[in-house]
Image 1 (cartoon, rainbow, N blue to C red):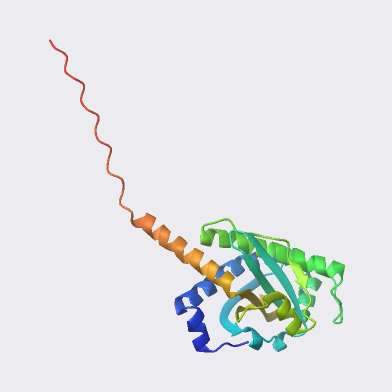
Image 2 (cartoon, rainbow, N blue to C red; image 1 turned 90 degrees about the vertical axis):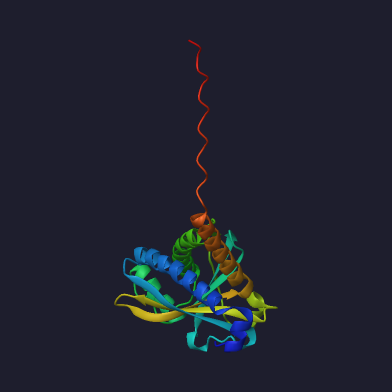
Length: 229
């Protein structure tokens, strides 16, 4: 899951890489707050590591067995943000949500899928709200869907076919007294570019408005003509 330095600078400038990392860090911080409420436990999401990865080199061996959740942006920006989590971490989260011990060999049945999607809907809905403020436009998502990763090559062909590179952002996920792990946000280059461009243009417009000179004072109305005595 590593791209070489030259491929990064060919596609994104260092400022753009820092920008997407900062934006996703802030939005995931809001997602962590929403998760804390739902799980009734402190959740923190920190330390984004942004990588530009050739699709054929994208691997998740360190995450397997894994579960993916697809979040579609349907307003404000257009594209898909796929979150990849370890199945064992999902089991820990579901156990906390349902207040019962989920067996280690659990399958993602309809109930588990519903719980995962509800958690992600709350988290990524909150993330989208912060993203709206950051980008200066309304951002909305569709209902998240779980995506099986049975064969990675098949998964990549289905979701990233025709893409030479992917943007991956790895986060540290901590739930107090329960777990500390990682998850990965994966998006196409076009979506990352759109988020960066909207952000930088919004910042530039805000700066222009901040330094714009104040309008000239209105001219005083002419004095009324004097009345003859």
